[in-house]
Length: 336
Image 1 (cartoon, one colour):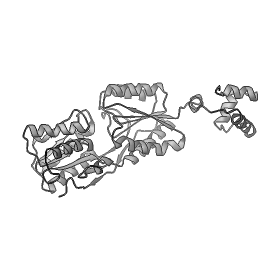
Image 2 (cartoon, helix red, strand yellow):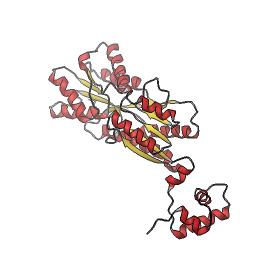
Image 3 (cartoon, helix red, strand yellow):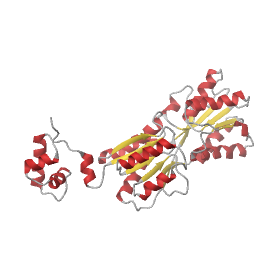
Image 4 (tube, helix red, strand yellow):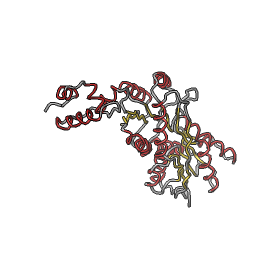
């Protein structure tokens, strides 16, 4: 059966297509009687609106791009939940694009979203500087852009939602020291991510404060997944570097390291204490459960959505940096 279009309604009612369109989007300038006539005819003929076409006609697509490094762990999905809490009731749809921690894929994703004429983009980047020219190009085109978690270089003036990585990392490491640990390994993550450096600096500040700094205990990974955590801790064991605890950049790195240690016969936390940063459900579904900095992921998503809506309404408003509160949750991986 042929799809009923606005042109069909126009012919059926002897009204212009613009009048039909305005009636279907509840334009306040349309006569109530005419609007009802259009709605009745649409129902009778089985017309199904094409919201993208209607919104484009009036300067919006009601689509928001959501670009993230991965959707494997609960991190991005929790942020997405918050974004949807704000945007869905307003009729927006979210287009999800995954970069797989690859800046070239991220670049393509952003280019595709521009082609889709999205009203704005919310992004968690995978490389601090690689795609800065793309971000600038998007901003120059007056497409609202909001970053969360991982943010671009300071030279780029953008709205962003973050946590205090440096301070919270310091608190984690200090907790390990106060439980008697002195040989604290740090699994860093790639240095092309700003908060990897921020958390590493928080780690260094505390181990230097307590005079237990040892450069051999810092391991930088190429990626962010479980195998990267496993390989990092394997390097320490192969080099016979002595450690009694681990602070990992993320839950995934911590869990990869912990699973490998358990396979090697280590007891957690008796032999090695482990703590992480992220605070997804992953920290509570492993055994032992992970001590972790928990970020308010749903609230981060909600705040990012609010910022993008403000920019859609008025692109000229000043950019904002929102710093969200976090909580260090002590669990069995560090408490004997």
